[in-house]
Image (cartoon, rainbow, N blue to C red; front, side, top):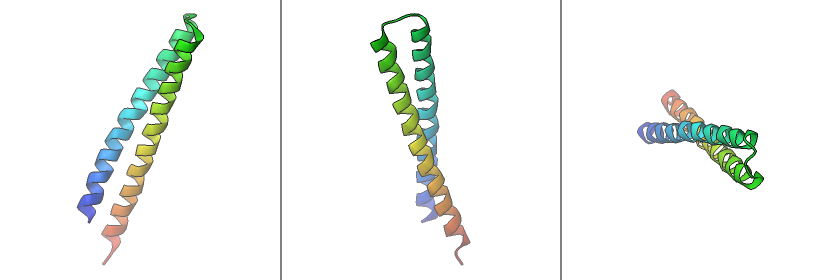
Length: 78
């Protein structure tokens, strides 16, 4: 059972970190567009997409933490 949790922990953590990084990057790019006086709907849509990516990354990372706790609980069983 621990092997199953380890695989889920690894993949959720990896996807979570990738989405967090992508979300921050897209959001910062939207900020740059706003500072360049681009139409509001362009930077607004891009900023919203970036925040969605960031929040999805946090959700995946939270699942990775949960699976890590399950792994620790499995290891403590006699």
